[in-house]
Length: 192
Image 1 (cartoon, rainbow, N blue to C red):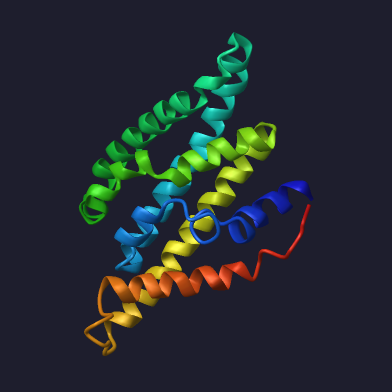
Image 2: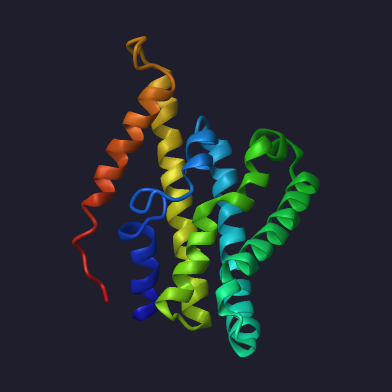
């Protein structure tokens, strides 16, 4: 039951994009088409799940025994950067069209604060290994859900007439704000 509560909380209540406002750069930059947003979502799920596992292992088996807990940010960033390089090489080889569509935003997963945020939140919450991985997968699934929903909204907006004063990026920010308010409705739910 605790694992289900962790995953539901990560997806809806503490959504990294909609509630904690982490990962906004790829959220706004890759959300013009649903296909591209889905590709980014899958890449973030893969990276966040692996980063959660690897950062938990590094923190608990290297940093804590050596008394170097204060280096967790540097260690987590190195782990995430390595994982993103692996994902980038894999996508470039397996799906060149997705690699082209993601463009500069794929390497930016390295600096995606949502990926670092899940590693830090796992450490601060004191999760065990399984809970940390489940929180990583849930957080990434919440990110993917938010970016795909937002891409769908932006595609619909692009097909409609919008006032010139708010067309383009301003209407995207307004839509993101309204989505965030919708996710605020989940904040009163307590599962744990």
